[in-house]
Length: 339
Ligand SMILES: Cc1ncc(COP(=O)(O)O)c(C=O)c1O
Image (cartoon, rainbow, N blue to C red; front, side, top):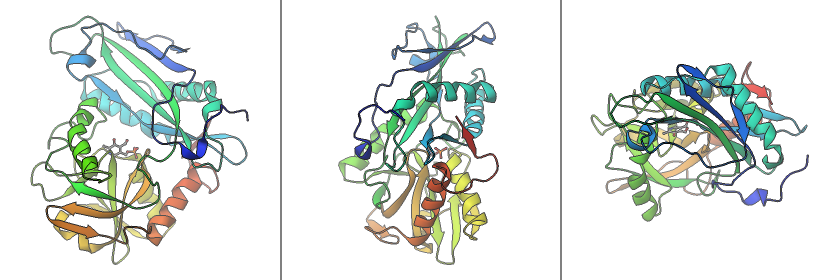
């Protein structure tokens, strides 16, 4: 397959302008046909609700080049459904799952030369988003919407990839208890910029957020979910209504149980009980599986498996997940959609 000239092995997580993006408009209760365009600028009214009232939702997903040259999408129906839930939360119209997946496929095909070759560890990151547009000034849902999908080749999200990195517990909350934490909406991320920057300033990979009500339980690791392996080999992830339901996390809950034979549980993870875990990590589409070396909480720095080595169970989960995504390991029914 012909590709553009990019240093595939040294890709980070940065914007790269690719050739085509999908764009579709909603008005008077209907989506238009949708089209591919080369224009990477959006032209919207100054009154757009997205600009003032945060009426913006998005998704993050990837396309993978396999060994046989085909292209895999990983559980795109799950992204479509989560976007539908996010849209309902912000009173935005839905994109039907089949329309969403067809649009994703069109964008991948139109930018095929940007998919990192098999074996480089890279993938094509896809960013579907929807925003409220049109002439408006009141705090109310927009009467027009734009749905678009663009893409770019990416490598590791946290520096180091499968090398452990350290995180710091933030004093800030990511989301309110009964707020929008479970939806993938722009406002959640605007609020995370300052805690993220403070974490980076102190040489941590990102901020860890505790539950907004009691500040005693882990919710999220930056823009990724937390998991831990207990000393008696249980795969544990936090349960809370203000966490974004990570597709990677639910995939790992399944794989840890079905393929690795671990007991799995979603439950509270107390920040003062980290010693129950022998390994810990962050998981997400962008983060994949990023081992957590240690967590700074107030004056205490807790190291899990090691600050430099990846724990054996974390490594097994990583190999299983990425093996499925890149087509080297058989996927559970329905997880892989070919482009
Ligand atoms: C706040 C947050 N948590 C978790 C995740 C991981 O979710 P997923 O595995 O669906 O990418 C993401 C990324 O989408 C996120 O932004």
